[in-house]
Length: 272
Image 1 (cartoon, helix red, strand yellow):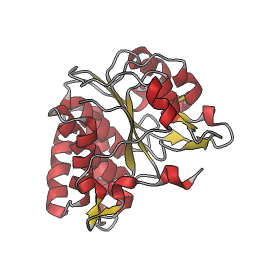
Image 2 (image 1 turned 90 degrees about the vertical axis):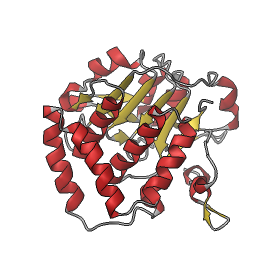
Image 3 (image 1 turned 90 degrees about the horizontal axis):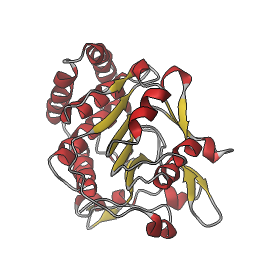
Image 4 (image 1 turned 60 degrees about the vertical axis):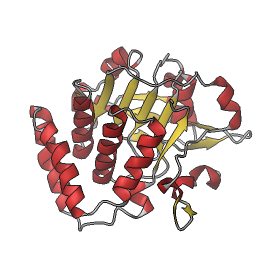
């Protein structure tokens, strides 16, 4: 893959600070795609489909999805509830889609790259391109979901291409493997800002800077808000216990490193 497609421009220095401190940055897979994207619009609908931990090995992702759904007063599809049938029956009618799961990247067959679901099932790029998604924003909270095969025209064939081809106005995807816990904290702030009426690009910038400057006290406050919400669900409460173990077992890390705060990029049209 061409390195320029992996470069997080928002993390580059500008006046001595990361560009994301002062500028909202969004991306396109290629200039040609702009003419095919649906017109932007601000999402005022209070409906979201949030999918969390369908593979059973990402407790922080399960807590994350439950919290995100709770901000909109919606139930989340968690664990083995998130089958392909359950996702397909809901995915075309929600303006906001959030997937906190594994992404599978296939360099040999880019159209086979997929979002992993419960019971070993998945949604591939090829299948996504066959759906009609009237979605303002799709968030793929997983590792390397913004990567893919670069074509001769410098376009990328991957999950983002499938989502845009299906009608999605914008996608939030990652450029490299992401940390489970820091991503959950990041997504919590992103959706709080989005729910409060921020533009998707501005919500992303604010969440990036929030995580970048997060100290231990702020982290505990953010964790508490996320975890209290999750404990209202019996299923999510069990994930909370494992989430806590995962969060405290490693040494405290510096979220100011771009690895933690800079992996996600907004591709496509935001709203204004």
